[in-house]
Image 1 (cartoon, rainbow, N blue to C red):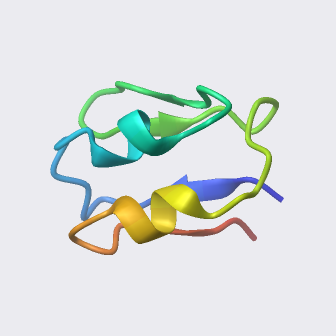
Image 2: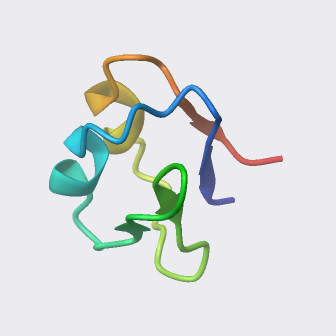
Length: 57
C-alpha cells in the first residue's frame, strides 16, 4: 500500500530526496506519491520534518 502525503506538507522536498523509487513528485499545493512507483519502504515518513506522510488506507 502506497504512502500518502497530507495537507500538512510544507513542500520542503525532504521526502523527494529520500525516495529510492522516485515515486514522489511536486504537486500543487503539496508533494504527491505515485502509488504505482511506491515500494512502501517508509523512508519518506522518517524524512518528513512535519510528519505529513503516513501509510495509505
